[in-house]
Length: 271
Picture 1 (spheres, helix red, strand yellow):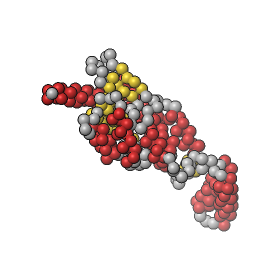
Picture 2: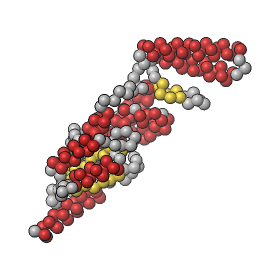
Picture 3: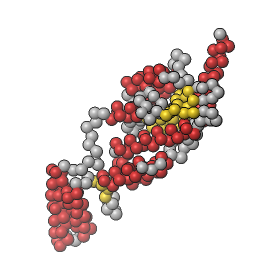
Picture 4: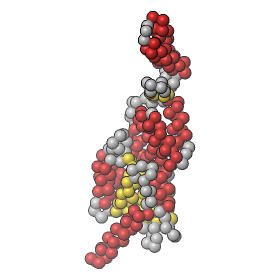
C-alpha cells in the first residue's frame, strides 16, 4: 500500500527540520547567539541571578553553534540542556533503516521517547511503513505449509498485495496486504479507497489478508466491505498492535481457505 502513503504526502508544503538552515537563518541565529551571550556575560557581573546569567550564556552558545554549523534544533531539555539536532535524528533513523525489522522498531521506539517530534518526520513515517511491510512479508513466507509457495511483489501498487501465498491442495491464492494510512489517525482518501477496491477485485486471488498496523478502522471496514461485496474475494483481518504482537499468519490463511471452500461447496449444493 505504499502508493497510498505517497499520494497522501504529495503536495505538502512542509519543510523538514532535517534540512540545513539557509544563509539568512544562519546569520539570524548567529546574531541572536551573540546578543544572548553578550547579555549573559554582562549579567554575570551586574546581576545576582547567576542561574539566569548562565542560562543566557548557554542559549547564546547554542544559537551561535547553530549559526556556524547550519544544523536545525529539534528540541531541548531544560534541566540537563540536552539539545537535539536534525543530524542526530537522521543518524538514528539511518541506523534503524539498516537493522532488522525488530531492531529497527526498537530504535524508533527509543527515538520517539527521546525526541517526541520525531514521529512527525517524513523519514520516520516512511521507515515505520517499511518495517511493517518487511514484517508482513516475513510472516507470510513463514505461513507457507508443506508443498506451498509464495510470490513476492516488492513493487506492488495500490490495491496489489505485497505477497501472495499459494495454498495446497487446491492452489488457492491468498494475497497479503500491509494496511496503513497517513497522518496520526491513519486515514486514506475516498479516491484511494475506491481505486484500491477496484484493483483488488481484478486480481487472481480467492481471498486477502489485511495486516492492520496503522490504518483507521473506518477505512479498513470500507476496503473489506468493498472487496467482499457481490461475491467478491473473502477478506480476513489481522491487527498488530506493536513489534511484540503475534505475527503468525497461518491461522488467517486457514480462515480464508475455509471460507472460500465453504462458499464453493454451498454453491455446488444449491446447483
